[in-house]
Image (tube, rainbow, N blue to C red; front, side, top):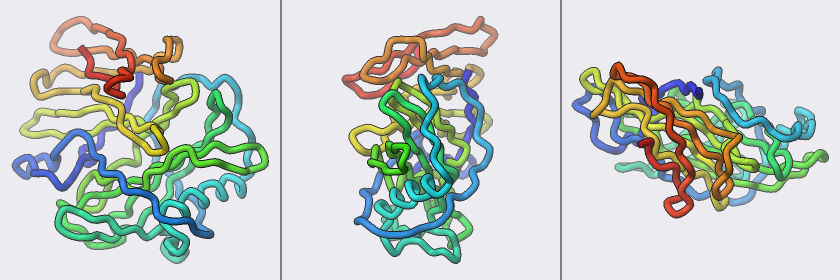
Length: 284
């Protein structure tokens, strides 16, 4: 089963707070900003926090071996294109980015997590996530954090082509996206995505939903509508597993969802990707 660490902060902070107890307003976050223009040099990617464990599909071939310099050049190129030629501050290790919030335009320090190199049906791909540093400025509780997601296809000589880019998704609170525990998993023969959860706890009741951000038409989009726990059935938990042995639909493997709790025997259902809605619908 896929075990995903829960982040109660991975939510849009601009909505109303739940009685001030669960600082949460929704189950998905997503207000992508378009990338900025083309630019120049950058930093080394920051070390990531330990990711949660997951069962991902096994690639059919190993990714090409990139040197540290080649990998860094790919990351730098993607972030320069997204944030701007002069956006990187070597002294702070930040990519400067402004984001228009609900009440004002906020400035953020975006830092790069450790890039991931994966093998896909079309070849080697590089994925990297950026996150806002909540300590880089003074943020109020309702100021969201930011998260950027980027992917490219690469060849053995280090040349690359953009696969998807989303410079800023607003989620979390107090300048913290709460997104660094998301994990990269293979969701199709030629597709990977960032899997996590979003939700919170109010009066002892947890409500969480799986999020799965994947490249779609050049940007990252959340394709999950699968709840992990709900207010109506607080003692039930749904665990999910990507089924790499199943038949892909529109490039997406099916997902096995196992419902546990309330003293009942575990029940597993298979959720196929819905190409009309372009999402995995909720577990039955």
